[in-house]
Image 1 (cartoon, rainbow, N blue to C red):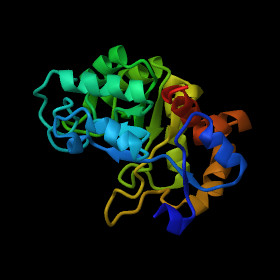
Image 2 (cartoon, rainbow, N blue to C red):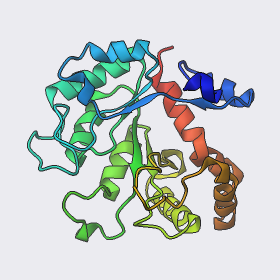
Image 3 (cartoon, rainbow, N blue to C red):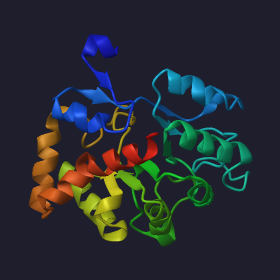
Image 4 (cartoon, one colour):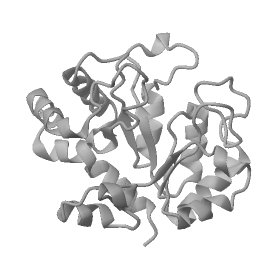
Length: 241
């Protein structure tokens, strides 16, 4: 797929900046959910050797990593295996993504991880006192836990929540007001909504996102951080020297 589409992979610290400078389309290879481990920690090193540099620890379904937001809580947050998986990601140089995880999971992960946490796709609830069970939204406290690690929260362009790019950018601005511009990014997984497209689901329209952010009053340095710079920093901090 990489060869057919003319893509390169970011594998080491500094690769994202170098590839961007060369104007080369590039990806960070990721896995959403750690079910492939089947309890075998050594498989993280196997996928690292195959180019993995970003691991989301939990997804839907019960996981031996710990509790996720869309299943009944039964494991007290982060399990021993989950802690070991984070330590292995830190050792090898893999971004630790806590999307889908409960706040208790994130609280424990923040104590274990030696690198900043990423919460790649979510949004901060508008009415935190009325959050529904099993929601994929997070509270301000949840977002601040990620930010306190030096991490980044990606705001997700969900069609159930926003009607337009401008709506989504407004929510990005609200997240910035809660955790600061150094800790907000553009959410991933924008093709995961079935028949209803995300309000931003095509990279060719990226200039429209930037224009909306400028209209909203973001300065160029702030846009640079939110539109990728914060993730680049986190990626580099997560990689081995």
